[in-house]
Length: 255
Ligand SMILES: C[S@@+](CC[C@H](N)C(=O)[O-])C[C@H]1O[C@@H](n2cnc3c(N)ncnc32)[C@H](O)[C@@H]1O
Image (cartoon, rainbow, N blue to C red; front, side, top):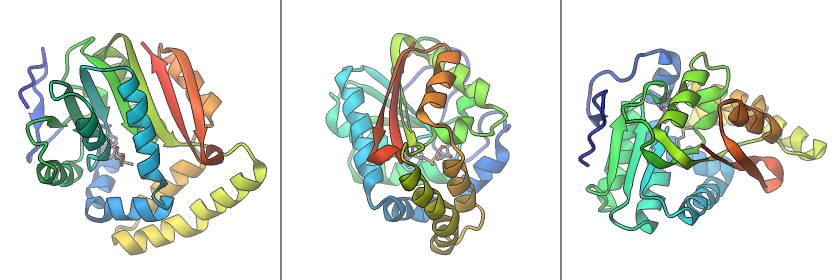
């Protein structure tokens, strides 16, 4: 993908350092999970993660974008969804600071025959290598939580996503959320506390990562708090839709 950002050079997939390195523990953690990341995700969500990503893709398609940035694109599921459905001339870029996650994404993109259509860029969302007002859509599938939950670089990440969106452009987020019903919340939290960390460690062979993922999901913001955060970051026309009783949510905001 030939993409020529204004100032900072973008590095496409390959070895080396990325970003400014503020979020190193998180980056190290994601380096340990890619091989089984998709499998574990499907298992833990009973494949609902795929359905939720396709809802995000559907929301993105509604806006007929010509340039889309998927921030924290991981193993590439959302960019693949988009490449299958958007016209060939659409610029689709997945950005992630984890080289191992990007390598898995690159293999999937090649296998699907989308190598020329999807750009995969190793960059930190807190220091994006794209010009101002460039994208029609910035999407995040299960990456928003990583960027903002107890993350010292949260404000920078939000400011960067606002910067690269064109005025009127949309942020589309699919993320875990907090169920509205106390009953569902009790069982969902018990599942996150008792099952996910242990099974995640066992299946991925990576102690720690799934403890973090489960803990951050359990303690993450409710939809109103996400909306307040988006409003504080400068988004307007903010709306959300709760999914599966509030276990996840789709958020949309406009720059
Ligand atoms: C839970 S995964 C989600 C991956 C993918 N979007 C999906 O739908 O499965 C979060 C991703 O965000 C990436 N990430 C977290 N913080 C980041 C940052 N500051 N800059 C770039 N990528 C980041 C991680 O490397 C990881 O691949």
